[in-house]
Length: 102
Image (cartoon, rainbow, N blue to C red; front, side, top):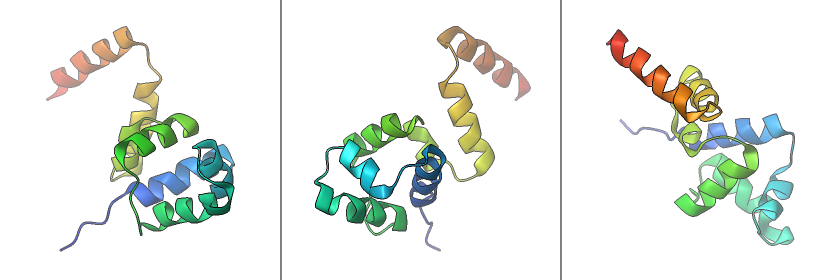
């Protein structure tokens, strides 16, 4: 059974949350204006997958961690975003708490 990547869904979700068009996002990433919308559409449809440096730039532009794009479920995706925004010392405390639960 083939596993479908969550990346297209997460990319669409993050972009629409920021309320920017595919073309605008592509242009912000340095794509040519004439092809920006089409390239982003291919990523969101799963026809093509951005390489890691491009995905990192997308994540920065959309304000989400790269790991967000690979979360299979909505709860994990939301957690990734919340954790990313935490200070490092708070992340360490959370990690210790989670380890204590297992």
